[in-house]
Length: 98
Image (cartoon, rainbow, N blue to C red; front, side):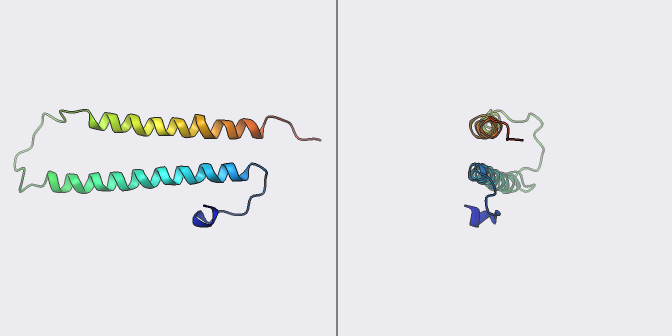
């Protein structure tokens, strides 16, 4: 993963864990980027003027977007609580010798 992201060599004992976390965050951002891009193309095709000449002001009638938002928030919570906080707590568990 380090070669793929062009990360520098690890300079600490916990550098590998932090690099892995950075890798997971990059994968999440790639999935979100591709997902939003596909949604944008879908909206361009679905709501083009030739197919919908008159606007519909009633709005969305389902909760799919809410479910997707909850899923993304859940993944971010897992990244924060499941990965970031344990790495940070391990790094600051002991004070360095003076």
